[in-house]
Picture 1 (cartoon, one colour):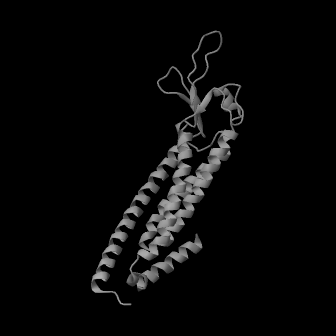
Picture 2 (cartoon, helix red, strand yellow):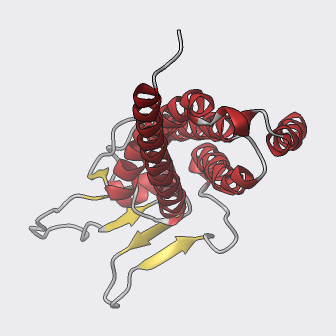
Length: 235
């Protein structure tokens, strides 16, 4: 059944608005992906995964230490304006007990920044394919970060934690310490990765329907698809 000119015009206007909305959501997704990549860097380098609780010293014994601990450094408060930190952040050498969480966070960081790099493929490839590539990268990043968040408290039974948090430290029990903002940020990063990956899958599945038919069948579209398929095969 043929469409009337008025119906065709209305359908064209709806499609145009829908395409604009999808592009706006895609831009928002790209910005959030970049922000997530920056957050991953902060999560990796900050020595604030756990920290000492506020303790009122009553005398009669050694003054309890106060400070924070991360994957690469242990920082203890001192008389100086800045805390004394030990570790090898400059060489990215994690603390011995936290090597596995550090490696997983590094893997997650690599996946997220790879998804940021894939944003440049929108110029050459089918947008649906790019969205799906980024979605799988972000999903993998979220899985690695979630596994790191599980292994980190499992590794608390170590000399560095006991030195800072007391002898009551065991796996999943932080003694005189509590989780700090970097660990909470890592947990939020897992949720962020899941949301971004889901949104990328949705945008990828909708993208083919949003493209005009003449763009889908054009020579440039087929060329871009061929280049993108070669990239995906190599990846």
